[in-house]
Length: 110
Image 1 (cartoon, rainbow, N blue to C red):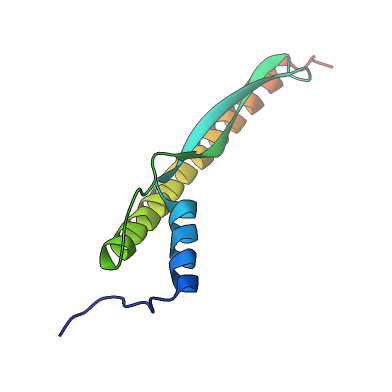
Image 2 (spheres, one colour):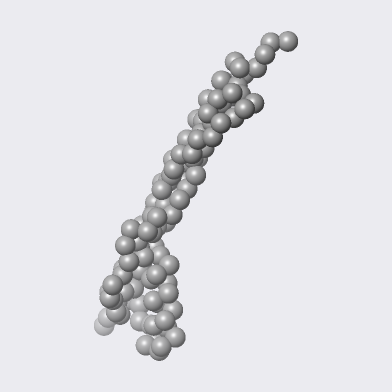
């Protein structure tokens, strides 16, 4: 008895698997920091965003091996999205607090 995913071997299913492999193959999500000048506070403000990068792609696969590689690529993409999203969220909160502190000091006293 074999266990695992068995897909029908029709041309449509093969095309669908190939397109799915191209979409998720080797994608990683990484946080990046961008700086811009804030004239209101007279300082550089920083913001973290997420970018998707492609690490590699599938050259040849078939059957169960292809399904396993697709599953692994999906897990890697999801894991990097969660970790990078958390880093970007924490970074943006820290940058927001930093801006609030510096902007309050830069405001003229009335």
